[in-house]
Image: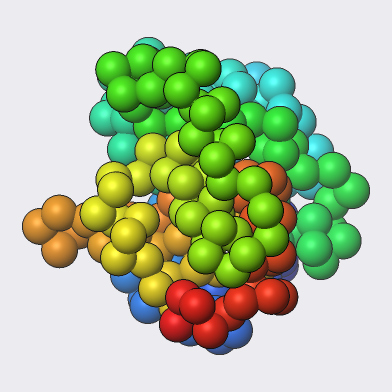
Length: 203
């Protein structure tokens, strides 16, 4: 088994044996990662997972956009890469996460239909403080803003849908369609703070 296979196999084993993800979900991660690897092989060569850089990720995402792939599919593939590199970073298999500086937000161009910058500032300013409900609302709004999840998806969120280690959320969407959505470090900090002080509020 070569190093590349070992890294990917470790990740898939982690999802199955430690996170207890379903076989279908593990296969979806595997498919997304193999697709990215295949793209790099066909476009300049694949240097190995530990040598992928942020620019490589950006080129791949541009490729997905040029294929006119559905935004939800682009987000899922980016989420798979993000989760994989989060795992490699935590296991010290890579020093730098190449996905860390990349944010792909669903429906970002539609945001002005709902919030303008002054309105966003007003909302965040109104959520300052360390009261449990204020912290919960701030975490939920940050999640809504950062991921593009629907209001109903955020409001119905339960603790067992959150994976803070991989910074992903299992979202139960319309038509019983599940998907995984990644969230950034800032959102994770809100949840870390919330769970430390008021876990009972959201259980």
